Structures are given as structure tokens and as C-alpha cells.
Length: 319
Image (cartoon, rainbow, N blue to C red; front, side, top):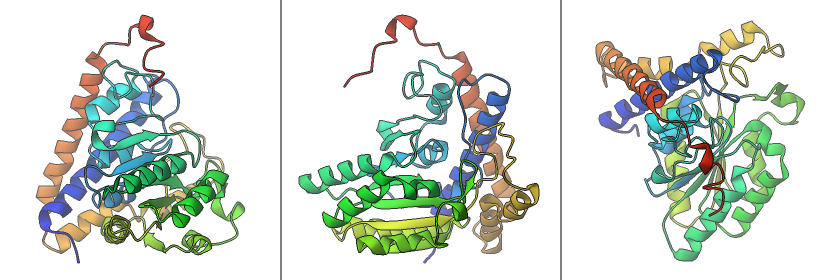
């Protein structure tokens, strides 16, 4: 059953906000105003929003190097996120994390990690804590398809399965691990069948369809919250931009990217909302405009924020 009208509009608003944030971050990077790499998630907005909309505020997520969208979908402040990637003192990590390592504890984000697959053990640890405390909370690690070939990913699924932990492992299959296509590193087409090795459900969904992701995530989260253990949720989509902003992308044809862009999750969901009478094109235009304004304000906030004091360089390193 589709979520109510207000929820669907919120989904579209969050997807539009993520898209504008990523476009702005890429522009700032190309202007030399962001130090370090920026890994845009354009094309993958539906998986971030569909999953996070199925979570409660107290549930936790763990991200990847491509996690601007995950954080925003969980409710992180665009202002503090933009300040962080610009290295400002008002950022979530006081300018020390940058684009790849944003942790927004106030909205339930344990942090994003640059090492592929490294977030899964953190989520399993959090889920174990929930179980030991008798809390009805859920932990959700996001991983790219390349992460399924790391030892920590397999160990995490195995432990979560054996101990029946409340984890929803979200695998965003965008077909590439940097420049390596998934067909060159994995000998199966449907990555969700890997769940069978651990005796847990594996669900494959269209990662361009936010409603499909939301429906699958809602079921998996409810299962975890009820004490029935983990689920592997695979959202098949595509990243429309390179592995990082400004990447030459010599490993894939322009025609391939163009073909996938036909399935743009924002364009698709906009059409669904209009066709089902949930919103008019004019109303969605207003949402798009508001998202642009919010990101513009976030950029201004970040640029006006102070740089960290060099004398505090060793602060915040140890708990």
C-alpha cells in the first residue's frame, strides 16, 4: 500500500534536496572550494530516501564515502553538512571529516566511512547493543555493490544472522566499484541471493523507484524490530556521475550513462505523483524551487562560517 499524500510529498522533497545538494557540491569542488574528493550519489536518491523514510528517529544508519544523500534523508542539516565539506568549524565534525566522513549523531547517523564495506561491523555492534538493552531499534548500514566482496561484509551478515540482530543491510547496486563493473568482480546477477548463505531474507528492488524501496524497507525494518533478525535489501540503480566529481570516466560509454538516465528516480517519481493526483506539476515545481533556495542558503551559511582554529587540531580525536 502506498504511503499517504504527505509522506509521498516529503519523499519527493527529500529527493529534490539531495539532488540539489549533490549538484552544488560538485560545482564547489570543480571551483576548487572543496578540498579532497566528492563522491556524488546522483541517480541513487530513491534508495536513500526510501530506506530512511521507513526508519524512526532513534534508528541508526552507517554510511559510505557516497553518503551525502543518506545523511540528508535521515534528517541531517544541509547547512552543517555543507559547512563540513567546506572544512568549516560549524560542520558536523567541525571541519575534520569532510565529504566522506560526516557523522550526524543528532539524526542517528553513526558516520560515513571511506573504506569500502567498513560500516557494516559498526551497525552490527549497534544492533547488538539494542538487543542487549531490550530496545526496539534498528541499525542500517549502506554499502555499495563492491562491498559484498569484502571480508567485513560477510562477517557482519554472518554474525547478525547467528545472533538474530536487528539489522537491515542495504546494498546499493550501482554496477560499479570505482571503475570495475560488478560483472567483472562477482559471478551472479542478483546480489540478493547472497542472503541465502546466512539463512536470512534477501530482497531485490528497483532502486530507481522510491515507493518500491520504501515498501521493501518498511517490511525489513518491521521484521528486525519484531526480533526476527536481519534482512539483505538490494536496491539496483546507477550513479549518473563518475566515482568522484571530475572523474574522466574512461571505463564506461556515454551511451550507457544516457540509457540509465532515462530512469532518473526524480523524473520517475514526479510522473507518478502527477499521474496519481498526489500533486500537480506546479506544486512540485515549488518543491524544486524551495530545495534550490535551501541549498543556496546552506552554501552561504558555510562560506560565512569560520575556519577551525589551528590550535584545536588535536581536539575531538579521542572519545
